[in-house]
Image (cartoon, rainbow, N blue to C red; front, side, top):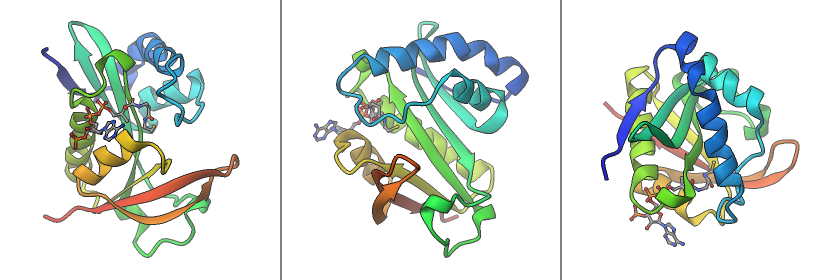
Amino acid sequence: MSIHILTLDNPREDIAYIDELMSLVERARADNASPYMYPNGRDFYAGNLAGATINILAIKEDSLVAYAALRKMSPWPEYLGLPNVDPQSCALMLLNLVDPEYRGRGIGQQLASARITAARAHGFKHLFATVHPDNIASNQVLERQGFHRVAQQPMFSERLLRNLMRLDLTD
Ligand SMILES: CC(C)(COP(=O)(O)OP(=O)(O)OC[C@H]1O[C@@H](n2cnc3c(N)ncnc32)[C@H](O)[C@@H]1OP(=O)(O)O)[C@@H](O)C(=O)NCCC(=O)NCCS
């Protein structure tokens, strides 16, 4: 299986992926192995493609099979408490979404790795991610990439239980 990992870099044109991205989100939502996804809508994903986040796609034969995002951590979100690092040097990995038919083939790992590379390229020194404690695949992906858990607490207005994971990027 030939999968192409693409880091988007043109927000004016990247919005063209919105329909494919929403189709991927719907396929994932329809799958009962995706119980930990935050229920974001089309506006959120359109905002990401328009430049709110760095966006990474996995493409197979012109079809979108996975999506992941990374954004700067400043301002520091209230739900994470007070930081012991400069928020300007921090980025948040959010969303790692693999088409249910393509899971377990290393694509989630590749998207995590591509985000770490992108974070380094943008000069970030600390990476964070939040993940539900029972999301085994997602925790495994993060731990394999070197993240470690620094807190576990309810987050967001929905008070979802999350592990806060951290990776310090050394030179
Ligand atoms: C989390 C997710 C992105 C992982 O993507 P993936 O392509 O299936 O992951 P990979 O194949 O790269 O790796 C998954 C890892 O988890 C492990 N894993 C998966 N399910 C597991 C289970 N039930 N028990 C133990 N390990 C498991 C795999 O063995 C693999 O570990 P390894 O790299 O050490 O061998 C994917 O499952 C997904 O899209 N889930 C739904 C959305 C979601 O919850 N996203 C995260 C929060 S936004």
